[in-house]
Image (cartoon, rainbow, N blue to C red):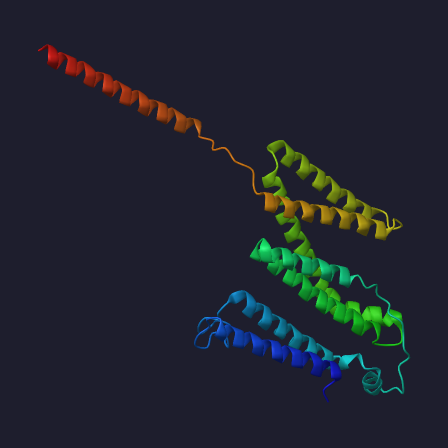
Length: 280
């Protein structure tokens, strides 16, 4: 039996994928390109085709997830668990995903004007927010026990979230810091690299050494540092890299001087020979 959520998201997904295929053919796609995602022919205008097909595939994925978890329907879950009823419960997780989703949408808007890579980054953020928000909504109403709901969500999402979040944080941090260092002066690059290293070491030491320390304060400090680094990286990327002076090796300079000396000697010899010929 198909749930209401499955029907809703699956219908949206099929409609978007169909619209993407039609858009591909009407914007220059040929042969089987729009149907094979570009494997057998062109897909037309890439940005519009990618947005429509990508969003449609995401909606179909959400639909499959909803039907797998029975759309968080208490009646279906009670029947599956062999109980008469599941007591309702209040949400146990804080909902900060709307803020992250707004940041992703803003990144996409900036990427449309600035750079394709920035747009793709925003699109990835929005997709991650959709999955995380959906899992929170499902876990909050999975059972009547908030602790069991939290444990159930972490059991499913933690093996995915921890490696993905760590890799994303490292990649974004390295990219942002590299843009900042390439934009500032030599001395400024040394100072900024030292400050960032001290902040990372300090926050890590606080998080590992004192368990009674307020973890929310550590998380807030890490968030402030991360936002500052990302903001500085975006600004530095827009402003561009500093001018680099070309340096020649000493051996190369000596070779150039010796070549110039040889040419001058040859020139002087030629002048002397011409003078002797004229005198004769």
